[in-house]
Image 1 (cartoon, helix red, strand yellow):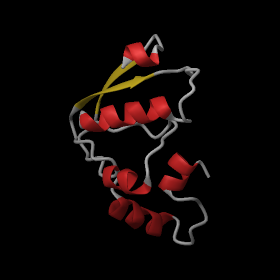
Image 2 (spheres, helix red, strand yellow):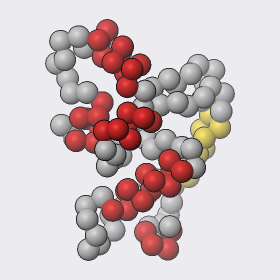
Image 3 (cartoon, one colour):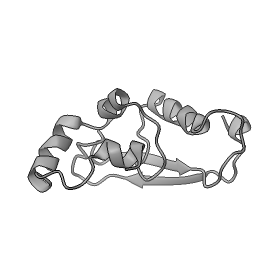
Image 4 (cartoon, helix red, strand yellow):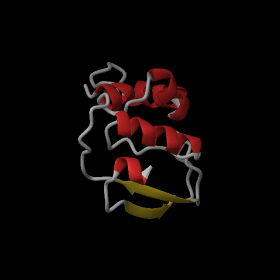
Length: 112
């Protein structure tokens, strides 16, 4: 993938979760994870998001989760299969019952 994307350096940041579960995204407590990222753009004739989608697919295949601070291109079904929609709705109902703010998918993928 590095030869196709061609961005260096690749930022590699290991982190360990605390002793509590991260139930919205399925990260297990007390586990070591690797956050990696590319901070650049790649000129391309491909569709918008082509390289991001490649990374999303690879991360999912490896059992990881893409950080939602970056641009995401998941369809709704894929997104909610990775980020617990039931748990999210419980939290949304508790803290934003009037739906004043966009939901997680709208913010992270639709960029509303």
